[in-house]
Picture 1 (cartoon, rainbow, N blue to C red):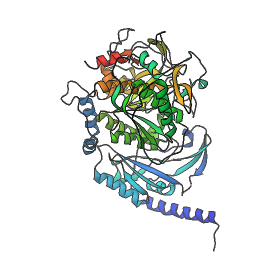
Picture 2 (picture 1 turned 90 degrees about the vertical axis):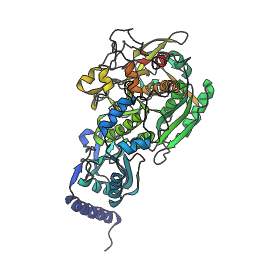
Picture 3 (picture 1 turned 180 degrees about the vertical axis):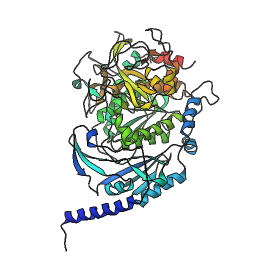
Picture 4 (picture 1 turned 60 degrees about the vertical axis):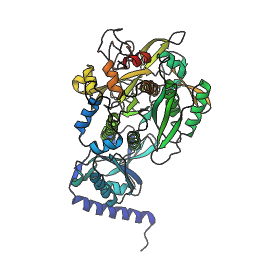
Amino acid sequence: MQFPRNLAAALVAAALASLCASANAQTVWAGTATQGISLSQLASASDYGPAPASQAITVRVVLALQNKTALNAYIQNINNPNSPLYGESLMPAQFAATYAPTSAQVQQVVSYLEGAGFTNVAAEPNNLMVSGDGTVAQASAAFNTPIEQYAQFGNIVYGNTATAQVPASLNGIVAAVLGLNNIGQMKPTLVTRSQVSVPQYDVSYSPQQFQTAYGATGTATGSNATIAIMAEGDVSGVITDLRAEEQANGLPQVPLTVVAVGVASTDTSGWDEWDLDTQFSTGMAETVKRLYIYDTTSLTDSDLALEISRWATDDKAKAGSASLGECEIFPYLDGSMLADDESFAEAAAQGQSFFASTGDTGSFCPAEVGENGVPAGAPMVNYPASSQYVMAVGGTTLLTNSDGTYDTETAWYAGGGGISQFEYSPYWQTAAAVPSSELGDKGIPDIAMDADPYSGANIYYDGSWEAVGGTSLSSPLALGVWARLISANPNLGFAPIRYYGLYDGATTPGSYPEGGFHDIVVGANGFYTALPGWDYTTGLGSLWVSELAADLKK
């Protein structure tokens, strides 16, 4: 008997589902950090039923760190001047030998994926992640969860509706399973003047003008520093724009390497974002030893987790920046927060520092794609800025004197800031008496730099100049400052610990910046107001480069 093609496919899928259900019923399962996603948790979404069984899917199985308590202690000791380990750092091979999963554990995961029908199964060099290509049917069976299809914001997406599970034999080895959804995606935080409704000033700064404003002139350039930008898609135009911007501003042409991570993509939707990141990180540094552009397939949590892991494992760039973020609840639910935090901890142990934008929706996180301003969405903060081992960079409005030198700053009304609901406060915030540390929660931002598009940056984009802002600007500016500092003092180590170590906990305006920070005491971002000392709008304050360079030598 000849069945119609669509009916035959449906019967095959049903038979496979029946076989999988029978096999799964006999398996003892253990849960992971990857939780199920329901329709009620998704904004503006409609349920389209089960995802097609034959749909291609790439999963990334995240393995658990070993000796995590010892790793945290090591990071603390290598940044403590009173410790005999002060100034040390690990090489990636040393990290893998001491804190990563064992080769035997990795092989267990590889064998499981291959046995479940996945192909192209490969482990990352740090043993923290194993990837494999398969289908929705294979992923659903391998991790004992249905995978549903949704329409959201004009796109068709999919996601697991139950907690991802693994056989009991992998319990304690597998921490999370990424790729079971493509709903979680980070968004660039770039803002143009047309996107904001509260014009304040009409200034666009060049890289050299930022150097003057933040007191970087006369200090070492970033010539000895290697830095990285996290990007996605086709970045060929970004390189062309960078070379044109360097020539127009009289800046040195920085050595550049693109590091491909995952399948190549032709997407250019983030082009202007990557322009801002590359032009103003290297521009604030004046020059760098090498700029690495890490270029992944998409901005899904899964692809970005692989990109961040690769940056840490390569250990080529001693500092990196991501002008990206999303409401922290989603990476918590899908397990990518756990995966990224492992990579950030590895990087910190290797003496690498990571900077991230806090977002452009004030004390809220964005409700949907492209929305900027206050209020917007839930009163939460953005990830990865909320990660313990990330330097969260908020936003200010910068005013300069007629000669270009620093005059004052106010907290930018849309600069992200607040209290994490999922990340613990790191010990350096506790020592600095950050208010949320009393509750055990991380407060952000850590620092702030200019972000207001009306006192923003002039980028070269696709053949012409464009005025932009957002915390997309503040993070690469902070990266450029750190490039200068580590060029002059290569043993500085991990940026957040060194910066908080300079903070004296002052609550009176003017009692610091002897720690190299401009204390910002005017402005608000929704729930929070700028105050003397540390606050949820600008953190420690903005960076006074010459003072920082002097203080960090003491």
